[in-house]
Image 1 (cartoon, helix red, strand yellow):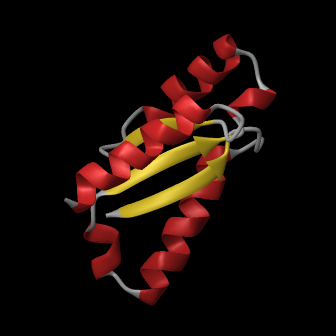
Image 2: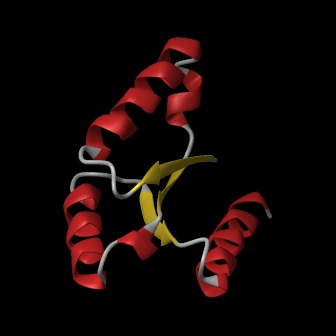
Length: 89
């Protein structure tokens, strides 16, 4: 399982995501076949409505799971940890 951590305040998160995929693909095509968790970080810097809009738009046409994270929110961190543990166990 791959985990991508992307800053949700990036003006073009799709471009940031595709750049990482491109770099990983140049390293190994097999790595691109792994399951992905995409974590959109720094959600505390935006209001909830904007976060929901970005997540909805970014998630379109992706088979990967997209979750959000705020390092200021312990519940948010626990959610990400639980997802990772679920994938490795």
